[in-house]
Amino acid sequence: MTGQTEKNQNITTLGADGLLGFVQERKIEGWRLGVMIANLADENVEVIYVFEKGNNLSNVRVVLPAEDPGIPSITFLYGYAFVYENEIHDLFGVVFEGLQLDFGGNYFVTAEKTPWNPLLARVSPEALQSDDEMGDETGSDTGQVSEKAEEGGEG
Amino acid sequence: MAKRTVIPFGPQHPVLPEPVHLDLVLEDETVVEAIPSIGYIHRGLEKLVEKREWPEMVSVIERICGICSFGHGMGYCLSIEGNMGIQIPERAEYLRLIWHELGRVHSHLLWLGLLADSFGFESLYMHTWKLRETVLDLFERTTGGRVIFSVCKVGGLRRDVDADTLALMERKLTELVPEIEELAKVFIEDSSVGSRLKGVGVLTAEEAAALGAVGPVARGSGLRMDVRLEEKDRLYVDLGFEPCVETAGDSHARCVVRIRELFQSIELIKAAIQRIPDGEVSVPVKGNPEREYIARVEQPRGEAYYYSKGAGEKFLKRIRVRTPTNANIPAMVKTLAGAQLADVPILILTIDPCISCTER
Image 1 (cartoon, rainbow over the protein chains, first blue to last red):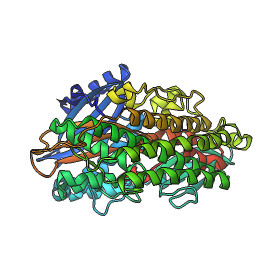
Image 2 (tube, rainbow over the protein chains, first blue to last red):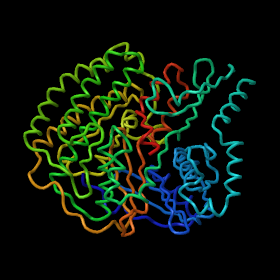
Image 3 (cartoon, rainbow over the protein chains, first blue to last red):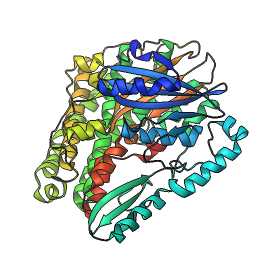
Image 4 (cartoon, helix red, strand yellow):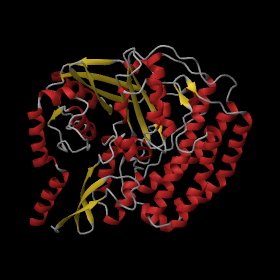
């Protein structure tokens, strides 16, 4: 089981404002999104994007303040990123702006909110509260479907 | 427009061995939209890095799944070995390949049985699982376990397999081939099976690529992608590995890919047994992981990622596992849209979902 290549281990660090340009380039060049990884590092949350093309990986890291982590969603470029973005939102509290198919904090059922980002829970309980409310309004997948079904029924 | 109805599917359903929920929006019998919900059994295994030292974590990561447990343990070890610059002995590499491919045979036979069960072919289901017992017996004989094997460790393996046992494994697998051929004939040629699988849940190559599908789901849609090929693994290259690809993109194609992989994995194991060198199966490991490392493994269900981050301490900072089912959920949702309600169980099964893997 050899072949895990060293060249694939480089992770470039970018600011949140440079992310979409980087991802757009990867999309145009035909890279697949392999995985998104979140880490809690000191007072920050890191989000790592891994793109793959055959034997090559292209990795980028975006560092966000743990107390208020927000970043643009890449689901308009890679629709299937919703599985990673919802997971990272639920576990680390990262808010993905423009997330398509937002489960509103209900993707994973966890006993406590953002269990992997205690800084967010400690510093900003109000933000979590408002997040809950948003989930009640739009995030409940059952609610979303019922709404759509009713629209269809009326039509 | 027909009146729309929402049918909740799961989390408990006869076809689902694990809990996943779908809201199926129907117009008459046709699924218009399917919205998945998971998270019923999220275990937070990755967070145990805070409480388990990195050599112990292999036992935790193995327990992510009871089917591809060897692959998970191996993927974790590959990540840590890459992190620490460890080269394991060649004999250990061969034995890892043998067990990993045996795990693929186990997984695909299990899946074929579940598929037969999903369309009501009970005798086919039981016959398939009977053959799977032979594979489990081989695991038990060589590792001591039937579900969790605990043979992989950072730096190699915990135990060796003697030549007589390897010869027995080769003989048993050779005997298994004609029995699998008999089964394969039913799955591939039987008209009643074909009527449930052919043309059902078609996923084109473009759609599979756009949705990030991996493993047999991607290969069933004509995508020639497989980590064993992409990582240019020396052992697989030497053994002449070439991914099994089908182009129809329907449920039948995904089934055929897995059946072809059964034979391929057996051939790989037999070739590896012929070539395995003598020698040690592990090397001493000193120090602690100090950096980040990303490893990939082709699990039976598709590509899996293993990311590790160390800081020179006995506890890792992070371990992240991305399993193939996680990547195949968008493809599953796509195949459900436009399907008939009666085909939903089959379509869910054709991605071979593992919720334990997904929720870790």
